[in-house]
Length: 129
Image (cartoon, rainbow, N blue to C red; front, side, top):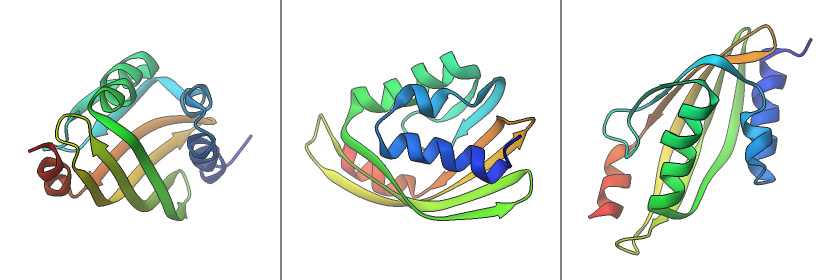
């Protein structure tokens, strides 16, 4: 059995490879994924399909080159905290943004059970106007 840190690191490794299937592979069927209020896809989504449609596909429709760059991954047992930066260009305005971000993950029984995002939503909103 992998540690929570290893499960989350595998998600980010898949992200770096642009491997969407790999990013979704360890998400539990009942995973609660929360995008921050004020973010374009704000809300809580449950399970791989809702997460894919309401987060990954939604961001792909709105932005070009949407990227998360991991700077630090902090091990807190069953919880893992990631610090990094989002960058993207809004398709409608052509404006690019950079925003600091923290992700908080909860892992149990080798599966991602919780995700919560904290980011500078103002930077994203500015790019969309």
